[in-house]
Length: 165
Length: 164
Image 1 (cartoon, chains in turn purple, orange):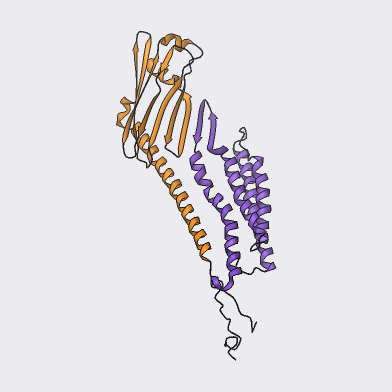
Image 2 (cartoon, rainbow over the protein chains, first blue to last red):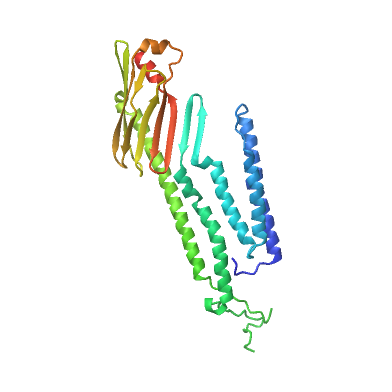
């Protein structure tokens, strides 16, 4: 991703796209889920917690930033931050892998801490991978010929290759 | 455009290595989640079938001798999943009038285990007439090492049903 030239137009398009998708995912869907739950079970305390929206705003800011600065060094901490925020969010949402419910005299406690470690593993790796990936690309671009940047000439309008005339 | 030379860069080996690690992690996660869900489903259907099946008379029996009632629960726990299954029954008794054993069974994948739980109420009439005849019990089921489910419920129902 770092080897490609990204135009300003593409940056803006990607940022708008990230804004729309993340707003739907983190704000619109949770809001309507909350409305649905309140409408279906009005006497219950089932609501969407505020932290979903708080995390959602952070996700939107970081995702839009990462999309706008794609291919640049400034996008790297944003991508890593999104991944780490995902870990914190999953951890927070699952109460650290121990969930408990009490209803009509029965208590249910689900302990899936080890499973949670497995679940957050891809996000932790994504946070590590982003700077590593950037460093590898940067080194490859600096090294130039040694990393085999195969130059492929683009045919000109008359079909000949540059320098053949 | 005429003299523009487009430079195509080969993806560096390091990037391929990073992608390889990503794919490996994704496979591990999918494998773990898939196997846990599969095991949970298989164990649930097997235990449900066992409880609903022909061995119902072996599930619970209450014997009243004088004023002392002994409730015996024998449950066959089949493990059709991929992970070892541990089932534990225990209870907290608020008075010395009720005594129960904490019992546990470990079942290897593909095997069956029998859980034998015994609970004794020494003075049944006192237990039934007292306002506080709740025996807080817990049923703990764990698919070692990934998931554990603990259900806390009233075991007093076993006594009332058996003795009454």
